[in-house]
Image (cartoon, rainbow, N blue to C red; front, side, top):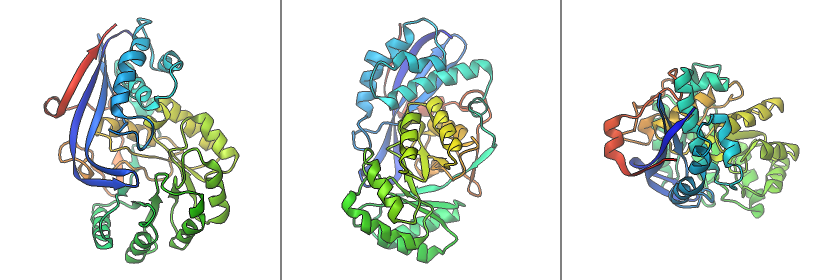
Length: 368
């Protein structure tokens, strides 16, 4: 496939409500989009890097720089490229998995559109719809948290994830469990906010019968995650620690987790995400698809991944209206805790030209 040019585009989507986690508050989604153009089709990828390097070392401005200076020229240089060939072409550049994922996804989307194949079928998806949950940010009061959870349950979500941090963990979790009962699928996400000294404190979450606790410790601290598994009855899920199939094998080998959260943008793209899925299936470890406040373009691709057989837990792929008054695409809607997987070629959805134009803050084409 010959790529005639690649566009980088920044869009600004204000969030319906501020979203607070242990590493900060987001008021708007400043998304970096990558568009790969060919003579026959164009493909879209979304970079999940946020504005500041607080979730990971990557950030949107750095992704733009590395894409323009290194990654895109490397992919355009051979003249013709396949999606499977993107990773080998950019492998010499260390890190920058989020930027690499967006570029690979754009090329893969274009390739599949030309072939008339949906991304889900290409990856090995087996379900027309997938179970989805909702991630609930940190709030000012317990009362507000309970109101938020009630609203999401009224919308049909069957699984609730609470963001936690030191000082906001036991009480909000207890309040939600006691208010909504034992049948609610409930999990918590710490985004690396705790340290080894917090092990005895986190064990106090056990009575709340959680589906899992997600990434309580630093991404490089697999040892403390292993210790938590030994001390606690709550299943431990890794997120930020999972960067590749190799890192997944290492984490499973030392017993650092019971469950894995796969975010395609974090691991370098959907092809590596599929390899991680296959590793987990071979080890009998359940996986689920995490979210990074993606627009409809990224959400569509995540749904395709979540249709694979090993994704047995609800993913963070909420309805568009959970985050945005206006999305870049037709809104995605969860019904009865399920969301349909797009069936069109590639990621199966196109951006709305008017929304794309009005929400764009910057764009630039890179050609060979």
